[in-house]
Length: 172
Image 1 (tube, one colour):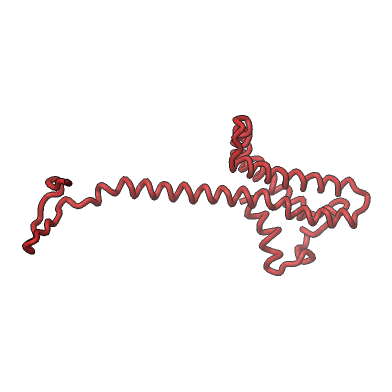
Image 2 (image 1 turned 180 degrees about the vertical axis):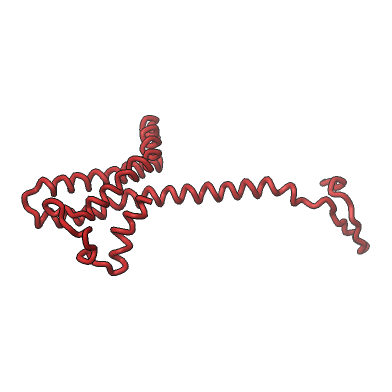
């Protein structure tokens, strides 16, 4: 839910023509150019990064410990880099005395902040679809013996067909 809210605020609404000025209370500045929308996206991204993404961070740590980097390392490093870069920029903007430039930095960092939840959501969706496909393949394999016919039709050269039990068939 948090990732979808982030997507809604940062990608869907602007894509549908809702301008930044039309976002009402979300466009209100909080401190030195950091607005309510940036704070909301930060608050929504944090649980996705650390709660939902925890499985990637743990698996990445284990993979690095084994000196065998995998996809979990890529997801963990990329989402963490985007999150902490954005957090550093937001802190810089709030500490900065120049509100005009920091406001532009704050607005720009929202897209980096969005990428963590989006990437985690897409990878988890991919893992879900992969698991569902594997389950369907396993189900098809277990159903295969049940679909085997019990009777076979033996065709002779003389043109006569004969029904025989499948168990009687021998392969040469």
